[in-house]
Amino acid sequence: MAALKVYADRVSEPVRAVILFCKLNGIEFEEVKIDLFKHENHSPEYAAINPMKTVPAIAHGDFKLLESHAILIYLASAFPGVADHWYPADLFSRAKLHSVLDWHHSNLRCGALGYVINSVLAPRYGLSLNPQTAAECDKILVASLSKIESFWLQGNGKFLLGNDQPSIADLSLVSEIMQLEVLEEKERIRILDPFKKVQRWIQDVKDATRPHFDEVHEVLFETAAIIDKQRAENI
Image (cartoon, rainbow, N blue to C red; front, side, top):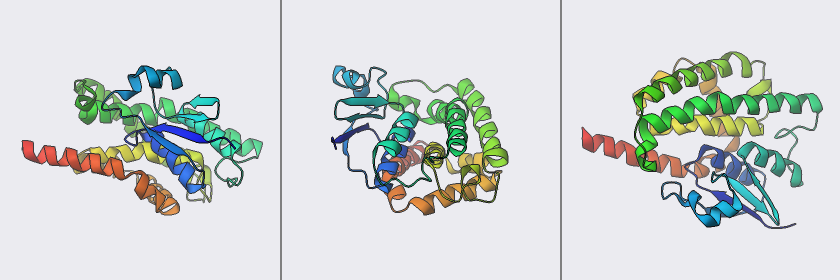
C-alpha cells in the first residue's frame, strides 16, 4: 500500500482527531509539520497539496484529501483491520454518525473555535482579539454542549449516539472540546461544569484512547502552559 502522509499541526483540533485515529488503529504515516503560528499553511508548497490552506490534509500515494471528517472516513474505509465501531458498515448506524459529523461543523466547532480564537489565540495568528465575536461564539458553544448533553448522548452507552464503543465522531468532538484547555481554569469551569454527562463522556473517550490521547494532545497542553505563564506575568 502507498505511503500515507499527514500534513498537520497538533495545535489544530481536527489534526489531533486524525492523528489519534491513525495511532489507535496502527496506521503507519509520515507526519509533515505545517506550523500554523508561522503561517506555513499559506506557503506555495502547501497550497499545492491543499489549495484551501487548512490542516489537516493527507496524501496517500497520488491521492490527496482535505477536511478532517472526509479524511477520517477515508482512513476507516481504506485501511484493513479498522474496527467497525469507528465507522460502522450498517447503513442506519453510518447515517446517524454522519448526522453528528455534519452537525459538529456548524455548531460545536463554530462555537468552540470562534470563542477560543477571539478570546485567547488570535494574537498568535497575527490577529486582534474580538470580544463581541467571542461573546457570540460563547453562546453557540454553550448551546452546542447542551445539545450534546441532551440529545447526542442519549442511550445507555458511554459514547455518542448511545454506542458502547467510540466512533470517529467521538474523536472529532472531544478533540474540539479539548481546545478549551487554553482558557483560564475559571472559564473552563464556567463553560463545562453545567454539563455532567459531557464531562463524563470526555473522560470515557480519554480512558478508551490512552496512552495515545495524552501523547497526541501534548502540544496543546504545552501551549496552554505557555499561555498560563504569560497570564501570570501580566498580572
